[in-house]
Image (cartoon, rainbow, N blue to C red; front, side, top):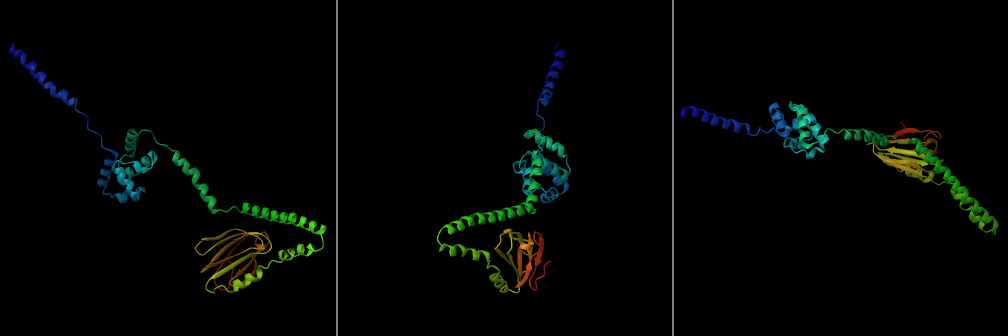
Length: 283
C-alpha cells in the first residue's frame, strides 16, 4: 500500500511550482520615452539631429525621452511630437500615440488647428494693406465738417457786428485776412534750402486740400502714415532714400533737396514717389 501512495504525493508536490509560475506578474511594457530614446541611439542620431528633422525644440525632445510631456503644450501637440520623433527614429508612431492615450485619456483634438486657420491670415492682411477707401472717406468728411464749422461760426459773428456800432467792424475783418493768406510756403522753402547735401530731404505741404501720406525710409521703416490737413506740412530726412505714397496728389506741394518740384500730381490722383540725395528725380 505504501508503494501505491508515494507516486500520488510526488505529483502533488510537482504541481506547486507550476501554480506559482502562473501567479507571477507579467513584464511591464517599456515607456514611450525609453522606446524613442533607444530607437534614436540605434539609428545613430543625436537629439540635435532629431530636433532639426522634426522641428521639435531640443528641450522638448529631451523631456519626451524622459516621459515628461508637460512641456509639449497639451495632448494635441504631445501626440504630434511623438509621431514626428517616432517617424524620424524608425518606430511605430501610432502605437506610441495609442499608449499615450491609454495613459493620459482622451483622443486627438483638432480644435487648435482650426483656431490657427481662423485667426492667422486675418491679422496679416489687416497690417499689410491700408484701407484707402476708408482713409479718403474720413478725409472728405473732415473737410466737409471743417467747411460747415467755418460757415456756422462765421454767420453769427457778422450778424452781431452789424447790429452793434461801427467800431467792431475792423475786428471782424482783421481775422479774415490772415486765414485767407497761408504763410506756410515761404519758410518751408528756406528750410529746404538749408538741407545737408549728403542726405535726401523731402518736405510736403498740403496747400489746397487734405491728402493721405505714407513715408518710408531706406530701411523700410514707417516715418509717417496719416492724413496731412490743409495748411500743414511734414519733413522727412534719410541718408539714402525716401519712399512716398501720396493720395490726392494735386493738393500737395513737394520740395526735395532745396528744389521746388511743384504739385505731386493731379487732384484725386494717388502717386508713388522715390527720392535720393542730389538732384531730385522721382521714381
